[in-house]
Structure formats: C-alpha cells, structure tokens
Amino acid sequence: MSDDLKLTILKTLAAKGSIEDTANAFKNVPSDVVLGALKSLESHEMVTYKTLTTEVWSVDPEGQDQLDNGSYEARIFYAIPAGEQGVSIDELKTRFGAIANLGQGKGFKNKWIKKSGDNIVRLVNTIVDQTKVDLETVLATGTHENKETIKDLKRRNLIKSNKSYSYAVAKGTSFSTELKKLETDLTDDMLKGDAWKTAEFKQFNFEALGLNPRGGHLHPLMKVREEFRQIFFEMGFEEMPTNSFVESSFWNFDALFVPQQHAARDLQDTFYLEDPAAATELPEFWETVRDVHEKGGYGSIGYRAPWSEEEAKKLVLRTHTTAVSSQILRKLALEPYRAAKYFSIDRVYRNESVDATHLAEFNQVEGIIADKGMSLGRLIAFLDVFFKKMGITTIRFKPTYNPYTEPSMEIFSWHSGLNKWVELGNSGMFRPEMLRSLGLDEGVQVAGFGLSLERPTMIRCGIKDIRHLVGHKVDRNMIETDPACRLDKKTGKEVATADTK
Ligand code: PHE
Image 1: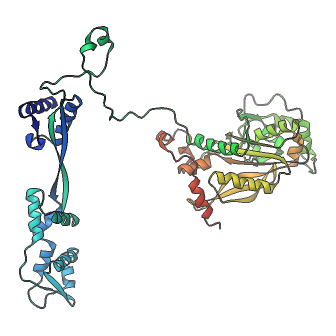
Image 2: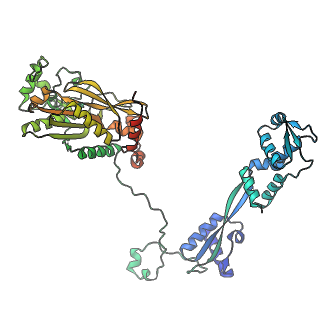
C-alpha cells in the first residue's frame, strides 16, 4: 500500500518533473501518509521535499451558535425596541444571562446602542450582523481575507485554527521510478562472496533517538549516604569499619555503661542470636567494665547490681553503630594520645514492629570526636556547622537520657513542609564510666551523635512511608529517575527563616 503511494509519487515526478503541492496532487491521501512515503523516499535520496503549511479555520461551538441564532450583539439589538424608552439592563440580564454583557459591549462598540440611565436604547434602526457574515465566510472558505477579522473571531473563541500540511516534491540525486530495497546491515554472507561490492546501503539515520542505556542506579539512601560521607571527610573525620552486624552485648551495651537490666536489652527491643548465641570470650579488660557497673569508679557509684559475664557474651544484631564506636575508642585508648574524629554510616537492627516510620533495620549515621577539652559547647558548635552543610540551618536541642552520655541532647530541626520540629538525632558527652574503663586518659573527653539516614532521605525524596523507600514496595522507577534524592541546600534556607516557636 505505502509502496503503491511511493511508486505513484515517483511516476508523477517522472512525468511532471516536480510536484508543487501534494495536497492537490493526491487529494484523498492524508498528509501524514504522504509524509511517511516522502521520508522513506528521501532516505533513499530519491526525492527531496519542502513542507508547505496552511492554516485552515473552523467554527467553534460558540461560533456555530452565533451562526444559527445571530451574534450576541445582534440578539441584544433586536431585543431593544425602537424609541427613547429602550429596555432595562436588568431585564436584558434576565433574558440573556451571560451573553447580555458580551452583546452589549460589542453593540456599544458598533454604535448600535447606548446607555440611557438604567436602560439601553437603540442608536440606529437597522443593522448588518457582520459577525454572522464573517463566520459564514470562515465556514465556507476556511479563512477570511481580513487578518484583523480572523484575530477578532479567534479572540472571541468563535473560530479555531487547524494547520494543514502539504509538500512540494522534487527529484533527488538517486531518483528512479523503481523502488530498491537498500541493505541495512553488512552481513558475513555478503562478505563471504562479492555481494558487498555491489550492495547499496541505507543511510544512517543520525536523527533517530537512541535507547536509554540500562544500567545500575544508586538507591536514594546510598546517594544521601555519599553526601554525608563527603561532609564528614570535609570536616576531617576518618571512617570506622562497620562490616560486622553481629556484636557481643559487651560492645553493644556493657562497654557503653548500659546497665544489664536496661529495657533496651529486652528481647522486644533487641534481636539476640540463637546460633551461636554467645561470644567465646570477652576482651581482656572486661573486669574493669564489670567493676564500674557493679561498684562504680571515676567519681561514680555504679549501678550497684550484679553484672553477669554470660549476659555480656550474648550475641546481638547490633542495635546501634555505637557498638563500633566503643571498639574504636578502646583502640584509641591503647595508642599514644591523639585527638581523633571518626564516623560511620551503616545498618543497625531493632526489634520493632514495622510501620510507616519504623523498620526493624535502618541505617545510622554516627560521629565521635575525642579531644582533650572537648565539651558540650563544642559539640553544639560542631553540630551547627555539620547540619548547615546538609542545608539545615536551624537546629535546637532538648535534654534527654542515654546510659552512655551525660549530658545528652536530642537534636531537632524545623521542617517547613510538615510545619513542625522534627527529631533528627541524639547526641551527648560520653560518660567517664565508659571512657575511663575503655582506658582513655583522664582529660580526654569524647562527644558523640547519631541520626538515621532514612529520615533525611525520606524528607529529600518526599516519601512519607518508609516502606516505599526500602523493601519490596519500592518503586524502581523512582530509584532510576528521581534526581531529587539528594540533599537540597535550598530547603535549608526555608528552615532558617521558619518561625522557631
Ligand atoms: N547510639 C545513639 C542512638 O542509637 C546515638 C548516639 C551516639 C547518642 C553517640 C550519643 C552518642 O540513637
């Protein structure tokens, strides 16, 4: 079928030399079909063509109404009786509704009618309904010779334009009246014989859109994680090795001076391992830790409750990355003193029921700063800079309780979208009971803070349910295409100007 059309075009060209206007030459063929044939012939360089565009106007429903019943201005005119009295504006409104105003306006302009007090009166006795005449012209010819008329009718939504396409065609460099099938591929069969010598190849189409390359995409969490990492590196932090998800209760709790009776250790909050259930041994300084729990020391009276080795050996899925920080601090204590800053971003586990904002596992962003003279004031100053780098310029602190830090502070930021303060994380100065039993010198203070990676990621991506960020409900398309899953520095500005009450 389309080959027929192509042949017809070629034959017409052979006979006439060129085709001035395809719309005329092939009256019954839709212009897009003609275009398809022309494009194909052009790719074989058999023809060249130019697009001719014409604008055809058609009458819209509102225009049709005025064709059928007279223009609004004519209808209003005929509703006004001749003479001084005229008719009241209110009555016209009741009779004609919305078109009363339109008709009057145009009638005033045409000097057909005028206002007289609350009434409208005629200025002339006969009129020519030019709008209707013009619409009839458009209906019959598809256009109007007066461009101003076209503009006016279009502005009044009485007509609309439909573009029509036609083409002027000429012979191309490879013109012939026969359709050749050009090769699209150089095949090994052609190369084996001589076919390649005479084969004619189709031109490459450099206009064709390529396929989107398929490939891996970073999960939004990983993108935000990378931004955090860069901030930490910028601020002189070293990364802690966080590749072991299983830790002993000793490192996860005891070394952090978390009492063995603490609620967080309950099965409901912590995942305990069944097999193996316990670590084979405790670090060599375990007795120091036991003593500070049972009897105190370093100015503390301790918990004054029995401490069990067995409890400390229980293996858990780490409930926080502070289980890694405690080991790093122990290492630091065994080396000659140096000020140090460490961070980690990795997964932790909590035995929680899953809902829109909680999963049984999440990622924690954690930082510790060890220095002589480290103080709460310096921690606040640090967090201020740290969050500013994330685009969060207003943060607030609220006292809280952690077994391993004193003082402890929750960190909040103003969320202009939610219009409230949202908790970002937790922080504090590690207690001497913990630091001294880990072996750090007196005078070395350590500040720490932790936050979830999921919360800022959800805020950046506009995700309200954490199950749409992690797990089987995640929309892969979002992961592949959402560039917004990044820290948005601009949002920070809004946070800064938000009301702090
Ligand atoms: N471990 C704390 C948490 O799980 C975070 C924290 C780290 C708090 C270090 C203080 C110091 O939220």
